[in-house]
Amino acid sequence: MTDLAEHSVQARPLPDIVTDLPGPRARERIAIDERYVTPSLPRAYPLVPVHGDGVAVEDIDGNRFLDFAAGIAVNSTGHSHPDVVAAIAEQAATLIHCASSDYYLPVYAEVARELDRIAPISGPTRTFLCNSGAEAVEAAMKLARYATGRQNLIAFLGAFHGRTYGATTLTGSKAKYHAHYSPLLPGVYHVPYGSTGLDELEQRVFRRLMPAEEFAAVFVEPIQGEGGYVVPEPDFLPRLRRLCDRHGILLVDDEIQSGMGRTGRWWAIQHWGVEPDVILAAKGIASGLPLGAMVARSELMTWPAGAHGSTFGGNPVACAAALATIRLIERELMANAAERGQQLLEGLRPLVRRHARIVRDVRGIGLMLGVEFDSAASAGAVQKACFQRGLLVLTAGEDVVRISPALSLTRDEAATGLRLFEEAVAAVDAQGTKG
Ligand SMILES: Cc1ncc(COP(=O)(O)O)c(C=O)c1O
Image 1 (cartoon, helix red, strand yellow):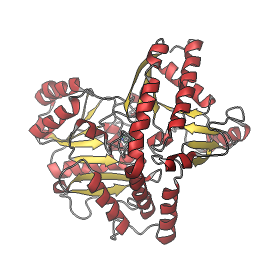
Image 2 (cartoon, protein in one colour; image 1 turned 180 degrees about the vertical axis):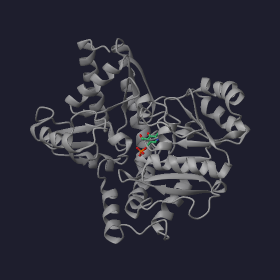
Image 3 (tube, protein in one colour; image 1 turned 90 degrees about the vertical axis):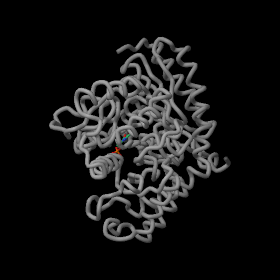
Image 4 (cartoon, helix red, strand yellow; image 1 turned 90 degrees about the horizontal axis):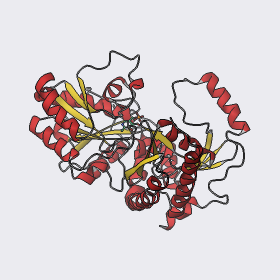
């Protein structure tokens, strides 16, 4: 894996914190942001990034951070991988936009062909490209209704599917995502994530609330992301597949966070040997350029011309970035994600014993790892203590810190991150921070 090492070699150490955090220039930029930018953005900590390279992020004051967040699992190939940059530059110099809804862009069809090749669906598929995860979710909601002629949808508590109205309705992770937006989309039923939720579907929802034959689709994350990096019990996804088959309900697999090689396979659902009817990708698909994809079994694509589309969706530059990203993931990064994931998991597991007062659980697959704490306060304090030490992580769910670095992470970078993370946990444990 010489390429991986080369991309990370820098004259300066990583991390390298040279000012107070936030530094003076960061404070200036934050003041401007706080005057002009919507206050709805949650903002984890006062980082003002201006440069990225591999798993290094440099802020406006010249501080270098080791990035274990990858822009919420987006920078799959690392920041500004040279192959991705070259693909973007070449495409941008050739054709930036030409209305994929109206014309036959070759690069759009190439991405669709690649997704057909790697999709965990045995028969032929077709793809709709868009600009974000939420748009892929919306496309699947519309296709499910169109193809089945049914209206109702199932989603899980703890799920996160995005911020548009339909995707917000499916989301069941935090009440604040729904607050003040009612009425949401009708016909969406939530049940607990896991086998108890499937019991509830069969015994309560289908019997007492709405017959199974009235449901178009179930939306599921094979590993919940924003809900707290939750890995379901082994029989959950196989049983969900059987339930869908029994009732003619489509299984929509939201792999927007868990897909594109992050778990060491192209798609997390492959760890359970389950085939979805529709699969959704975004985030890591184009290494940071905005691209979402809905891949569906071809026979479901019954909708005619004009039934769905997008002005920017499948933009040539984003598509070129996606093709370069797929090549890199396939060539080396997916295998690396599995190895580095194992290294990190083994390094994190002892925290449950060593810091038993605050660490409750360590879990995950590949480079989708979560550390659960005793409280939201402890998780937040660890996130902050990591930042102060030059390690970028983000919380998820109520009390989880997620670790989702680029798939290009090297062994040494993983070891450095582990050391800093444990230092941060130890500091919070010593302070006796409680919720
Ligand atoms: C599983 C999942 N689905 C959908 C989305 C929405 O994606 P986007 O923010 O690109 O709209 C996210 C984003 O975090 C996600 O993790």
